[in-house]
Length: 254
Image (cartoon, rainbow, N blue to C red; front, side):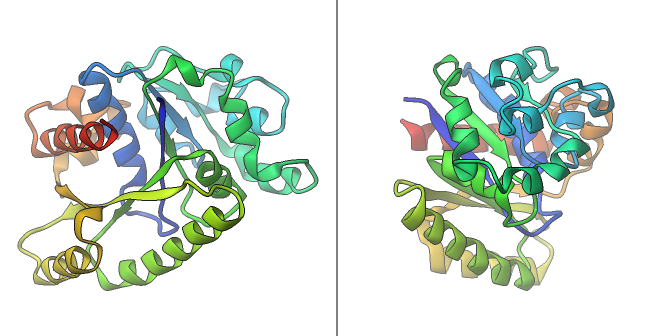
């Protein structure tokens, strides 16, 4: 069965896009067929995949509005060897334009049915907001991965996201679950980060991934080259961490 995983957190700057790109590439490295969907109007996942968002004729925006099929929008040639459904600034207007459409919450889920059997896993990079775009991602997903920094404000945001997931589960997607919490940009020398990490493990137990994504200069550099870190520096701590995360994701799916 194809697994659909939403990568979501309404807080910005927590590593959603970095995780989306590098997890996708690491899963491809493990021999899996991967589709990555960019649901953020900023289009950073698209650019970080080596695709210039400025010159795209069709994106996920056109899929959500029913103007293009998802197969027509799909990009099969990326440097990370995963397939991509791209996004750009056009997507910013989608939320307003979708308000009057039928089944506005499940338009992505319905569109995906056309190509879903082509893949082993589908990853979705959701925007840093609890809006209609994120809702489409959560309605289409089987599970949610929540990247987060180990800081106290992140714990407050996590509570809001968990409540949103519960509401989506009760209203639209009864099988949706939290796959796991991913600690990102982690600095073991930071006492506060270690304290918050301990709190997460106490409260969420096995829902916290064992893999911890460190602060790593190679991870920060790779998007500037339109590459996943695995192709930028496969021996870096960042690359090795995402390879470990891919193994955890695959073990959970087994």
